[in-house]
Image (tube, rainbow, N blue to C red; front, top):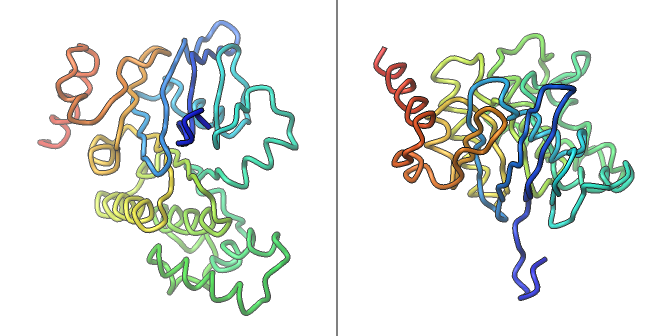
Length: 255
């Protein structure tokens, strides 16, 4: 927390660097995410977007720099402290990471059962409410293998919300789904932010999604944060790589 009583950034990268052998993935990257803000991390594949998410979760440690999550400096935290942070910050993985042998409803119930303070009736009601909220209530008794990629993502979002997080990280939520489903997922993420005041970080290369969701955007290129600011500011950004990225996307839209 900052000294003047108002909370500082919910998440902050302070000069974070990370390399795997010779491959430098993050090079002195700094950005912040304020409470209830949605920040999109943009860039081509392989520029450290997913590494940034894994660093926020504490799965990876930076080589240098500091990482603030849930207002705490987690850089040197042991696993027990990281698990406490992960109760507040949850991640929706690209593949959904659902349990194949459990029905949709049981998948969403899983984090609720782990709490051990709810009756089956309460769990049932919460699961129903969450499935309804993400638009997949009729699929409650199906297995994940019966669902499309987009539906699996919706279920994964419901399961993430079951643990009542303060912050949700989304890894490429619209990859490999059709345009209509991509639009629905974007609308859902936006609605959750408004209804639940969630802090969100969305890794994506989908410019339409970023335009719809982002309060601010981090643009990563060759391990560096070339731009950090609002989407309209990014459109005016003079950085040639950023402009090229925006123009390529316009071509895709016209195609």
